[in-house]
Image (cartoon, rainbow, N blue to C red):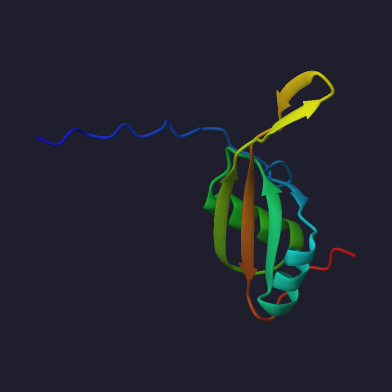
Length: 106
């Protein structure tokens, strides 16, 4: 007898494009991806899904998105003097654009 896995509740919140994309991730690895593979990394709202991310990037930057990959990044334990804490958990999206499109951050 198979038991049914419980699915997480879908959020009914409709986010605006500027609420979905929080900031671009400008790193050495990201710059390499953008020049070679036409892929760009963004920190996105944890409530957003791939379709919402695709729509937000297309609205904000006027480009055509071909693929969206997401990662949920866990928070890390950190210490400052005698206090222990955690950094926040966040969601990362790597967006692949059409070969004709580019996003200029600078």
